[in-house]
Length: 327
Image 1 (tube, rainbow, N blue to C red):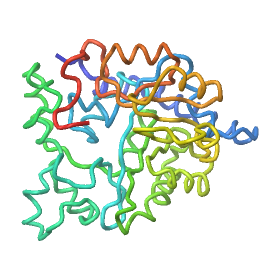
Image 2 (image 1 turned 45 degrees about the horizontal axis):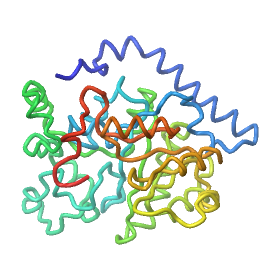
Image 3 (image 1 turned 90 degrees about the horizontal axis):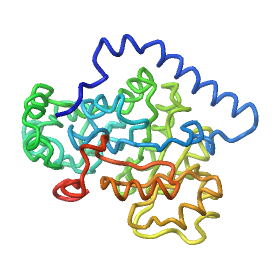
Image 4 (image 1 turned 135 degrees about the horizontal axis):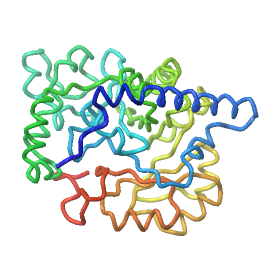
């Protein structure tokens, strides 16, 4: 059974002062780095120190519906950073959602008829239509990590939290500021959509207006987005996501992107890679590592952090750690 969450109102009230002080410290860190002429972009991960950085992948998604406030709130006290995904919907609102298609993690297929919609792609839906969707029941019904079967009490509790809605990035940034929670915002590749050219500027605008510039790192598999981030917001940290293979001349390539970190898939990460990049002052955060043995090996190699779906060692095992139906 899961331990009581630290997100309860009494805990929040008791820790309010500490969180506000922490937020002020982060902002002072950013200001000092900029005034000193040091690119804060490249120092983002230094503030975490030598302790391993555990990054919640789409929130606490092994026990809660991914990219929802239930998954984010459950992270408090269990990790030091949350990773989430963003896409633009039809009216230009930045929504926190992983897939282009709404089907896997919502009841969009059921609601589309009532809303007069044919497409199930998020960029064909307005934000007010998306807000009507239930983004939580699918998790209870499919139990993708087989965690609910092991804990019926949690299943029953989770039902009381339904429906979960698809949040906007603005909402999550505001929530993260209150809790002094750093975020890794992955900008999903929208080059197949007419909205693609807008997403980087809109994400930057939201990060800046939220006051969260010093607590957000922007990542993407679309490295042109990272170049755009460097052009329009050099003060915001960026990280390059990569799977299957590494770009040629990796270190010079990453320098050309202006990133502070490299986020490789676990299958293409070895000790030599970690040593080279860390010696060059680049952070290395590996995704998605649910096997505790593999996680320990990576941390022994000196990676900065790991993205994981499981936030407590006792909940992970070498069996049943990947969601059914793929990553």
